[in-house]
Length: 102
Image (cartoon, rainbow, N blue to C red; front, side):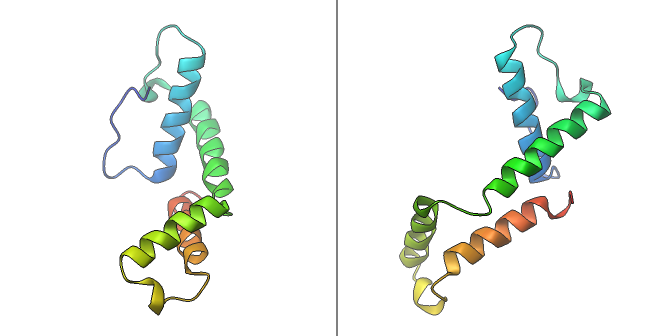
């Protein structure tokens, strides 16, 4: 469980890093360690894991591509887009999520 509510200025990488840290806390019960108490090296390790997790989504599964494609169709935007629009949109989202951190 994430111990502190993310703020709107927080990057997606920071949000994922905090979620990974919280998952570690869930795996090793005891005194939960607030994100603010993580050392800089520990935070850097979580950020590294977060970037890897987000980058792994760069190549979406067929189910993800299908879901994005269906939503674009529902919104009436599909006909104006190229056939690989779903993949392009997902790639842009991933690039934006990790852009500030790399």
